[in-house]
Length: 253
Image 1 (cartoon, rainbow, N blue to C red):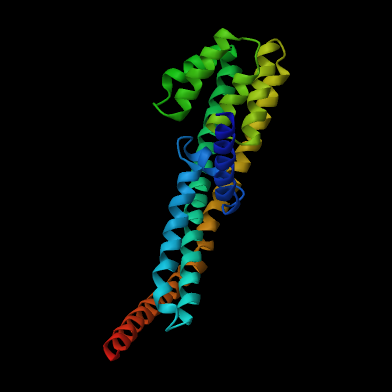
Image 2: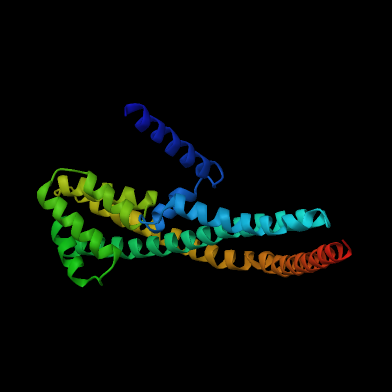
C-alpha cells in the first residue's frame, strides 16, 4: 500500500515537472497574482493541447507535402506563445491598476494621519467605510481584524501589501505604517510616509507614460499578425492540396 502511494506521488511530481518545464519561468506567479483559483497545470494543458492539435492535424499531409510540417510547427508555436502573451498583458495591466489604487490609498492614509492625528487603526476604519466593495476593501477588513487580534504582529501589514499591490514600494509603505503604529509619538515617521507617497507619485506618472508607450510598442505585433494569417492561409491551401493528392492516389489505386 505504501509503495502504491509512493508511486502515485512520483507520477504526480513527474506530470507537474513536465508542465513546469514547458512553461515560462514567471507564468505560475502571474496566474497566481491574477487569480489564485486559476490552475497552472490546467492552463498549461489547455494551451499545449491546443497548439499540439494544430501540428497533429497536419501529420497525414506531411508525406505528400513536407513543407506542411514546418508551417504547422511554426503556427503551433505561435499559438502556444500567444497564450502566454495574453496572460502577460493581462498581468501588466492588472498590476498597474492595483499599484495605482494602492497609491491613492497611501495618500489617503497619510492625509488622515497628518491632519487628524488619528491612529493607524482609526485611519483604516475611516477609509474602510468610504471604499467601494472590491479587493482593497476586502483586504482592509482582513487587516483590521488581524490588527485587533494581533496588534503587535507585522505580518498582517505585509500580507495587505502583497494582496493589494504586490510591489516593493507597497510593502515598504506598510512596514513604515507598522513602525508608526508601534511608535505613534514619533512624528518623523509621518513625514517619512509623506516623502514616500510623493516618490510614489512620480513613479506612478512614469508608469503611466511607460504604459502608454508600451501600447505603441505592440505595433510590430500588429504588423506580424497579417504575416501569420498569410501563413495560416498557406497552410490551409497545402492541406487542401494534400487531401486532393490523397484522393487522387486512392482513386488511381
